[in-house]
Image (cartoon, rainbow, N blue to C red):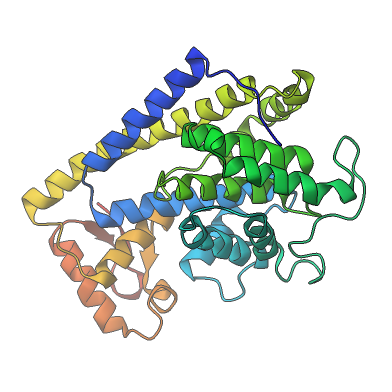
Length: 330
C-alpha cells in the first residue's frame, strides 16, 4: 500500500489559508460575464502554452489563443487534445472514486492522433533511468489509486492529495509521452472529485514553467528525503497561493469596472457585442477585414450596427473612416 509521508508546515498552512481566502473573495465578487469568460480564456491559453512548452512541443501563444477562439481552420492537434482532455475533467470528476482507467483515458485523449493508437493511453514499454520498470508500472498505479480512494487521502486538504498524486505520476513517468500534462489534469480530477473546482480561473502550469529548476529539484528531493513530500507541498501550494492572489487582484479591478458599467447602463450587451469585446480584449484592434473571421455568415451591416451600439455607449472607440476604420476598447 502507498502511504506518503509529509508534514503540513506553517508555510503550507499559510499558503492554503491564502488560497481559501482568495476563493471566498472570488465567490463573493460579481464581475461582468464577459470579464469572467476572458479570465478563463487567459488561464486556459497560459496552461496549454506552458504544458506544451514543458513537453517540448512549443506552439506560439497567439496560435493557441486563436485556435481556442475558432479563428484558425487547421487547429494544431495538440491544442485540440488539450481542450478535449480539460473538458473531460468535470465529467470524470463526478465519479465517487477515481480509477486507474481514468488516468489512462486522460493520456489517451492528450496523445490522440499524435501517436500510434497502440501507444495512446498505454503504459511505456521501455526502461527509463530512475523510473519504475515497465512491468512494475500497473501495480504501482493501482496502489496509488487505492490510496487516493482511501480514508487517509480523503482526510487531507484536496490540494495536498492532488499534489501528492501528481508528484507520483511525474516521478513514475508511466506513459510514453505527455506525463507532465497527464499529471496536471490528474491534479484537476482530484480537486473536481472533492468538489473543490477552481472554475478554470486558475492554472499553476505557468508557475511550473517559470520555476523549472526549483520544480525539478523539489521533485527529486522527495526520494532523497525518504519519500517525504513536505517540501513538494510547500512548493505547490506556494504556486497556487501566488496565482490565486494575482487572480483576486484582477477580479477586484474588474469589479470596479462592473459597478461602473451597471451604473451607466453599459452592462447590457448582446451575444455578438460580447464577442466583439472579447476579440478586442484578446487582440486590441478590430477592422472591417476581420468581420468574416470573427462573425462568419453574418453580414457586414449587422456587425456595423453592433459596433455603433458599443460606440454610442462609449464601450469602444473608433478611428479612421469607411473600410479603414479601426475599433478599440475605450
